[in-house]
Image (cartoon, rainbow, N blue to C red; front, side, top):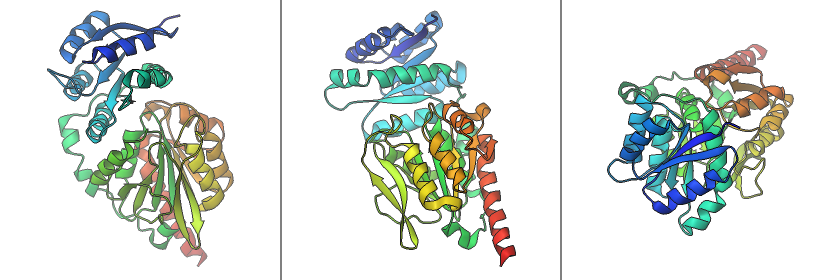
Length: 361
């Protein structure tokens, strides 16, 4: 067996020791070294040529973001960030994902050694996924600076009353934070409501929603239980809680609740998509974005059987093609599209629905 070679970069001797031990006790991973800071890591990368890097967010001499920026420009490689469960940690981690990191692991606030050991399966799973993922080069400074004007670029959808009837449902996992951002930035302010389940732990979705809200024409927020679902708004499942849609009289409302993990996930795309099939039916538009595993594939087929129109991200534009592949295999996809085409096709479908409605009238 050819083992995945991992380099650990962390200023904490305890974290370096724990991660090294967790990695080396698996049969398919091997920790080839542990660096105390990015300057040491730079030399070890040249000497050891690792397949995957685990990278602490905050370190002395050069912080993780500065190092990641240089790394993804000069030698792009799969990186799993090791973050802290703080507001600052969440914001920096989201910046790392924007720069091309594949995923992140959140350190527990208390009981660090026991907490890291409890995350061992999650850590090794994310390293394996990263090793197989499609690595994105860091966006150029010009592209980053050009992100804000894109907020003004989306023309009105002109779907009128229909935007109160239709709801867009999005499921995503690994690579999905950036894919969802790109999709939402392509939607105008008068788009239908959007409900999103992105696999993310507690403590990160508030910052993620705020970040998207600052970039998008559509208003973005973390979903609250029993709130009315409105056009021109996107609602993100809170980390660690399921999101579903329900009817309350003539209105749709969000249900946010605890519950057992589904397909090992909470929030689960399966939960959201099943509620879309049951409650929204033909007024739903489904989107499956990049992610590992099969969460949501079966429920997305239920959505299609109930009359929804479903778009699935294609392999070439995915960081990880697992969830889209499973949705396609389940017969859930009406169209398979590059990420850049999904928002325009959604709007085309909505405009076509408006035309069909007017024709019937």
